[in-house]
Amino acid sequence: MAEKRYAMVIDLNRCIGCHACSVACKAEFDVPVGVWRSWVTYGERGTYPDASLSFLPRLCNHCENAPCIPVCPTGATYQRDDGVVVIKEERCIGCGYCVEACPYEMRYLHPETKVASKCDFCVHRVDQGLEPACVQTCLGTARIFGDINDPNSEISNVLKKEKVHQIRPDFGTDPRVFYVDPDPALLDVFKRTAPQEEVV
Amino acid sequence: MKPTIVYEVFHPLSWGADIAADFFLVGLAVGAFLLSAGIKLYYGPKKVLPEEYRKICRIGAYVALVGLALGSVFLISHLGRPERFFMLLYRFQPSSVLSWGAWIQLGFTICAFWYALLWWRDRPGEAKHRLVVGLIGSVFAIGLGTYHGVLQTVLKASALWNAGPTTVASMLGFVLTGIAAVTLVIALRRRGEEALKAILAIRWVFGFAILAQLFTVLLWIASLYAGPRDAHVAAELLLTRFPMLLWGGAIGLGLILPLALGFYAIAHERKDPRIGVVIPAVAAALVLVGGFILRYVIVVAGQLS
Image (cartoon, rainbow over all chains, first blue to last red; front, side, top):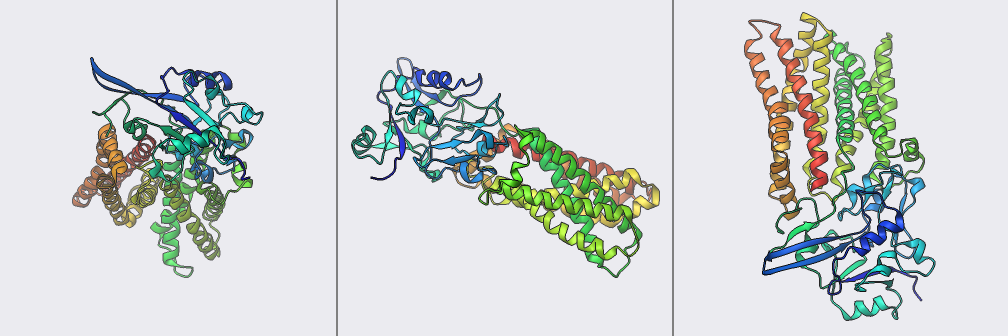
């Protein structure tokens, strides 16, 4: 059997935008005020009574071709054998180059430890057979986490049945976070160039 | 119908004025060193350097060392964990541009120190020694200047940085600010005829460097604007969020006004030779201010694009 390859599917039909995932992540890692490992982007369309709201939960994409790895000058960022991209904090010098290299803006410099930080798929939990905190807490069971190399896993079945999308696949990073039925415009707009403005 | 983003998280920018200062000062050092070593190489080991060129070479060597030292202070103090700075050297990662840059900067630091020491000692019979150190240092200087551009250009995450002319514009900007710093120091430290001769000796190089930088910056903006969607959005961001800093500061104050002052000095210096020193000194100061503003705009706008 092939070695494990972890990934996540987020079914937007089930997401209610409650931010429970964001809060669970904050609590799990004691993330300081002002920075987030995981959050939910909101997009609004139209005006009352013809209005709608769409969500895009955000977290590190654990890209197969992660651009944050080769740029790290000390080898602090690396990909585990199971595909999870992690940071060895004791090796990080806090130069911020990986923060600049991430096209999804998922990294930040931790205000207290002064090193780079981001979602790590809760590897401390996963290694013990548990689910990531955001998956466990999701009210709508919108998040499915697992091994995509295991044909019998729930995530493999979802990937077989559903049409999934990645954020900006044109970057060539091959993200390991997939979305079911996302708002295509939200997938395209997450950069600072377009906050509070209309989607291109 | 198009959606409007009503909730999004934006983390604080990780590179700010300190990184802009590092790029600016190290770039200035690279430019000053190349000017100094370039003159020395042009004259070779046997020809005697005219006195005004000796002054330029000496001051260029000192400016390079001081700029490099100050830039390195900004670089190290920017790190979240500055005490781990040495990991940059002993944990070398061949895939990381930054890792290569750390070693190139170390090599340039050694050469710049050595070169400045040779000019400070000014012992007879060391001309060949200066030439060799200048030559090796120039290789490192070109490498370091290129590295600072490539460091940004390789990042696909930023459409503003990930454009061809970024590296060229950076390198030209470094050479220009280096010449400006040397001109300014000459004007401040030397008096009358002595300063005038030295400034006149590099005036045309200075003017040409301003023109080349102006052309490259405009080309860079135009290529972004005409580029793919992300690059076009980045150009719009640059032009709409930083219009005063870009047009007023970096281009107007830092390039066009110094150029105009240069023409004014050429037209009027015969009437009053002091104009030939004061005006280039003011132009050099403006180029330095504009050079820093440009560096700051590129660093900040690049993170937003």
